[in-house]
Length: 512
Image 1: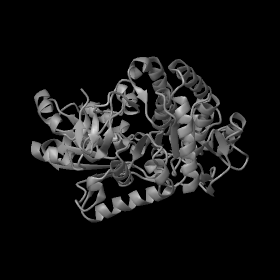
Image 2: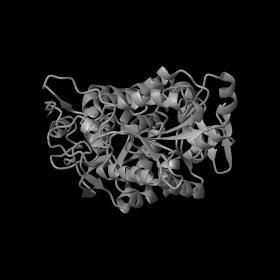
Image 3: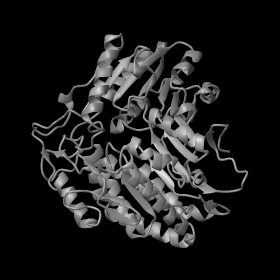
Image 4: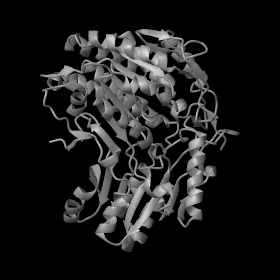
């Protein structure tokens, strides 16, 4: 079977459509930054490539530190004006932005495919979750802001590349709805064109948005430590998050820091193996490049043979490859579980970690091949990594204790409940976890001892939408929890003695 690129889905097609839809933001040769209410042709251009096939994309316009400070000061002026705008007007403008995003839904999704490698189904879902989620907030915002006021300064958003719409744009629009100006930094690894288009549509409706590009080292002083900033919202890894946490702790600044954790799926006194098989394939969505992915399975030794019989068909059914490759021009885009990793360097790093773990004693239970993927003839596949499953990674390997952020599962065998809990809590805190057990009493006893914000009973947990709250245990989260009403509370002020639910330097408060 020889595959072709689906007609009309090339990067050149997506770029042409961006220029047509938002010529103020997309010039023939570059993308602009947006600050001080204007599109700015500034920044040092950094070439970027698509993880899909290694082809060139739009260059990233990296601002310097001085320009970033000017952008933050301008955002404060916007913030002071916007916080006085009546709520009804804010709702109308956000709703108009959502209508524009809906109109250009497929273009936004196509940009996500090229820029961060999402399969078509998941790219569309990312856009839809942003739109649907914010529409819910528009309907609920009146009760959420009653008795509350916007922050004294704009919200600064620094997010990872994996969910530009359903995490970053969603947060920006809710923050603006609550009365704040918002600043966002384009993730260096991907999402530039998608975020620029979304920002252009929001700016046309008069929302107080700022979008700048640049490295964390260059922009952190402005986007994290500047006195004008009212809140820092961060989504990313623990190393970068730790540096942000240290800065905001010194300054006493409002913050929301979502960080990684090794989300674990425990199996204890469990027999519903057909259901588990169905869950396994779904856990590989987007190559496990999600904050709520499950890369660790902790399995009761005496049922390991049954677990493996259920697990292997699930992982063997996983499909991956070029997200836009079809056999015939009129074919629908493929229903893949994942495409590439975010870049070739990440694929090589993770492949090297797998090889090293095996050389130190890990047992490869499944090791997929690129030959199983769907690719165009002669395509660059350097950013792709097929699924891998390792039994008992050595304790010296990062795969033993850290989130791989790629399609690599590690299995750990245990004999006692104490060992089960120790293995599931290996990363000192996680966002989600699951305990698969037939014994309700065992779940009720063990689940509270699993250091994850959400614990599923024999099924996965997700970040959630609308009313569902979200946070993390231990080092996986710092600052205010979000989701539902808590997202609005995190970016507004209430009574002087208010204590927000979250993990703070001097207290931890679970939502009531």
